[in-house]
Length: 105
Image (cartoon, rainbow, N blue to C red):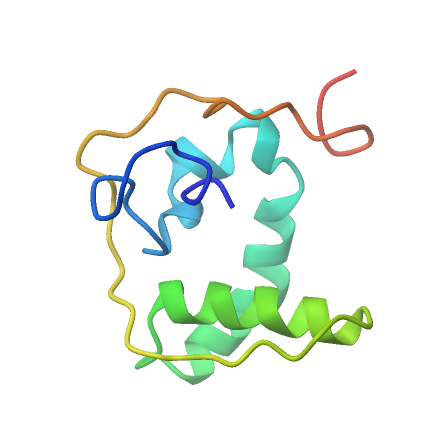
């Protein structure tokens, strides 16, 4: 969502490159609570299937969460390449902090 909300056209906006796992993004207020999801749920999958990119794994996790929550099945296309934004936006990326107990007051 952060990348889609960047207000820049692709490819300048970055897109799904798995950068949420970087300290710059994972420690930002809007992403509070996601560090646990990456470490506890996604890292074990990545360790077992190292050939999948973080970008694909994170997108697959999002699509799966939508479906499990009763939403539509989101068709996946694989082949994203991991990366780090060349010119990262300063946190909070134009987004509000996560609500307690994960984020700010």
